[in-house]
Image (cartoon, rainbow, N blue to C red; front, side, top):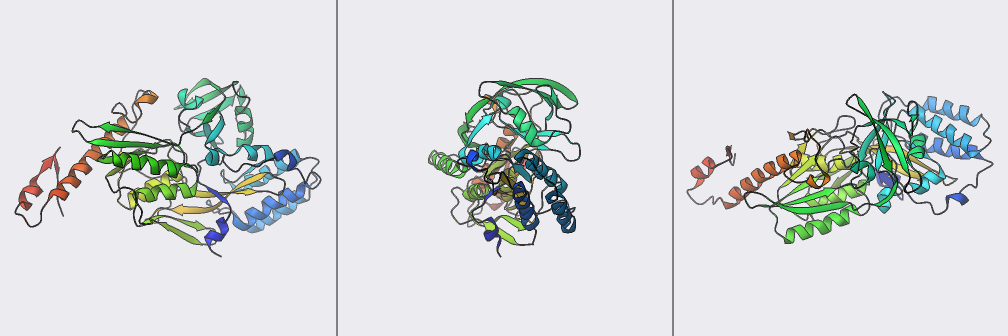
Length: 444
């Protein structure tokens, strides 16, 4: 069996936290097993037994078989008891990305496929070691982003309810609510705690934003930012690149900072916009089945490229970053990425609830497993010490962008000089001595 068959008709996600998914048309009617809750429990158990990839090396099938026996031996009076049992069962996996969603939650998990979010605009995960609720990233343009919430912030309480021992599902229920109402979060950052009251809103997210920046040397730089890798991202990026190519920009800055990830295919398609040939990513299942994705020869641009990354760049963002770096297609600038190298598949269960299960890990083109380690940029640059306004992101007030633009200009000038060099002329020695900003250009 090939890995393609495993993923056939399944939505494959690379979010740093698995709170996206498929729209179920009528979750109210999806309660056909009210009197047979054990079938739902067994359905979850079977999926894990068959497809779960253990990234921690702690999963033992013999123990999992015992888990099934123990949970099916109990009686469940209602769906809530059964669902709590499923969550308890999954906690044995030590995998924060393999999660159960009840029918209502599953119905709401459509961020990546619809580009629409109702809430405050944060994505969270449970740190197994510290038991903290960690914010992966605020989504740009949302109440959380505007309030200054940052990647790696810890949520200490929600509306004065402590999050100690709280699972993700309960946290999500408390954070979500009626549009226009507020939720108060107690945040811990760098040893200090503070409160933020956030308004719950319905937000339509434009995935790709862009603009043209002109450098002091007169170069036109195409700046593009991807907020999430949803179903629209590749199409939006394609249209953006075509527009910028018409305007004859000299190079590109691709901003993947605080991008928590999204759809696997979206990250592959966007990588192909920049990489003509070569490996993009490879995925590996628990059975050792490998599938390699490559460039398809239809790259939209070959112009110089710099990619901005930070601690909130995760999963799908790391696939694109790793592909750019390993193919020597561009330079990475910023801070080390989040480090999420696992692939989830969203499964519909027999009663209309859902399961996100880790089914594979991915490797960068050089075969690097970045899970928990992240990707170290070519040029490490911290963000501004003092926070900048949202409108200053991607401008020279943005320290990481400024460093990225500086590196891009060097690449553009070097590329232009190499393009101007005539091997049949006598200008080789003068060419090799050419300096710009103390940089010596060489053909060696």
